[in-house]
Image (cartoon, rainbow, N blue to C red):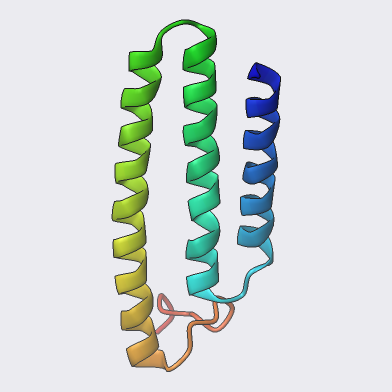
Amino acid sequence: MFEQGLILGAYILCVGFFGLITSRNTVRALMSLEPIFNAITLNLITLSNLFDNRETGEIFSLFVIAVAAAEAATGLAIALSIHRNRRSTRIDQSNLLKW
């Protein structure tokens, strides 16, 4: 069961990274971060079950879930603000730091 959990976590992590690298839309890039956080949570719980230290893995996974929720809310708020100002959410067209 240990190997299957790690393999599933690695697969979900790769899918998230692939979506993050290949996406041109800001919202899709933010949605690709969620599988990455889920893979981290799955690996934390799997490793904590291996070392018979369930409390530590579950506490860290709760922190990861809280960070993911905050990231999603903040990221979507920023994407909505950029869309209102620029009328586009494409990453390659976003040059907010240029004058």
